[in-house]
Length: 119
Picture 1 (cartoon, rainbow, N blue to C red):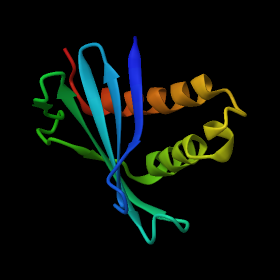
Picture 2: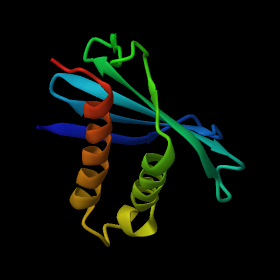
Picture 3: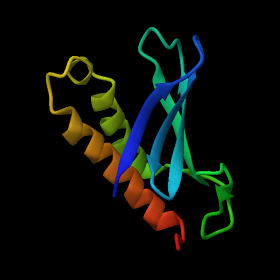
Picture 4: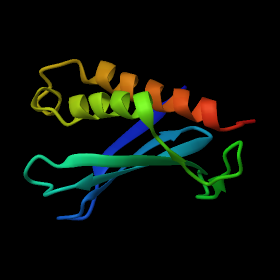
């Protein structure tokens, strides 16, 4: 499945980071909330994601919610994956960026499949 990954779109000085993964039929909006100063070791507080059509209509989860909060072991895995995407090595192409992107996208896609009924 083809996708486009848009990382770290945020307002200057904001403690909220938006990431988006655009697939052919839908897109996944990922919202990261940080505590502390963003320029001095911010700490990831929580992560939400929601699915939208390409026309920006929110798709409901299996439980009827508009968004899903990443918790527990999934949250720890997400933190690890985001740490790689924000690393010096990733930004300066010292590691395989495509592989890091795929790990992140596959993880998010597994959460999407677990929480949404896509037809």
